Amino acid sequence: MSAKNSGYIPEDIVEQVLTATDIVQLVDGYVKLKRRGVNFIGLCPFHDEKTPSFTVSQEKQIFHCFGCGQGGNAYRFLMEHERMSFPEAARFLADKAGITIPEAAGSGRNPDEMEALYYAHNLALEMFQANLKHERYRSVYVDYLQKSRGLAPETIEHFSLGVAGTSFEDLVKLAQKKGIAPTTLAKAGLASYSSKRNTHFDRFHHRLMIPIQNLSDKVIAFGGRALKKDEQAKYINSPETPLYSKGSTLYGLNLNRDAIRKENCAIVVEGYFDLISLWQVGIKNVVASSGTAFTLQQGRLLARYADTAYLFFDADSAGIKAAIRSVDSLYNAGVEVKVISAPTGEDPDSMARRGAETIKELIKSAERYLQFRFRAFDRAGSGLVERNKLIGELKEISARIGDDSLKS
Image 1 (cartoon, one colour):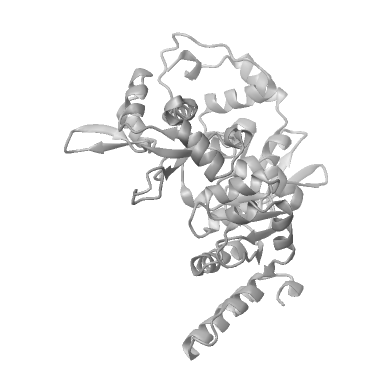
Image 2 (tube, rainbow, N blue to C red; image 1 turned 90 degrees about the horizontal axis):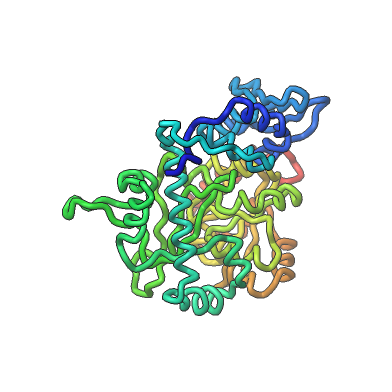
């Protein structure tokens, strides 16, 4: 790695960056803050809570949680929340403030492990994007993304889409040239090890690559969509790594959180392209759960930005089951749940192609979850046991809804 990634930063630059940073603006990008007196409060991002105990002081430029005790300045917030090292947090804030941090050649320090993992992901992203622009993969760009998926060039660029090549070692070889060991690439979830051949190989090959970013816009994982029609695994995602936890990450939140905060609601979809298609037609307050049921961590993450979640899944039985699996986590996080029902055989991606007005009409007709659950229940095909289970389920959910008017 270059000296730019080394750990040493002059003390005067450290103070200059801190002085140029408004901690309220910084934290507000991650936590929904409300003014209370001279301070700002919100739900703590470091522990589970329903009543705000997290405070940010603009005067002192610090944060403190009275619930879990976490506190500190802007550097500490990024280090704890985004798992950044101190040098990385400093460079992140310096970039935002327009301050140049001089390169410290010959500092003799080894890059922090997390920085190395971030660097590996950035290298992979650059390679995947370069592949997509190469003549060899023109059919992916034109035939698949533009014609089949209906995506405009600016949409493809906005979501940083790319292609993993057909080789099993393109990224491994490139990383070695850049000083990244195959073991580091494997720890980043970008390579796998073959004990039979005693060598590492690329985890992703011949796939459309969708980068997943954290709230600081750093790439922490990828979703890979098969380009071969006979590929058994339609999607391969990054595994759990020190950077990436699937159950606590929402795809698209870093890009769409401002729209979600503005609307005070989020449309929750399952797939990457569901989100991308909705974004393209102007529906920006969207996040994706990446094909899994919502976790409590994801619910609490969403609760920082919105009071209501609109579940918008496929119209088939699998989509209904996904909605049912997700609702507990959202209600437990204090988020009101409504369900958008697409016509039979449709999904968010296909409905988005009909235009923004079609989506807005679906949103207007969304049902509160209790109404949806009762309507979707197969009363004719269910026995007494199933009916009693439904009654118990609805009672439990109803008890968690604070506003009585929302229970009907």
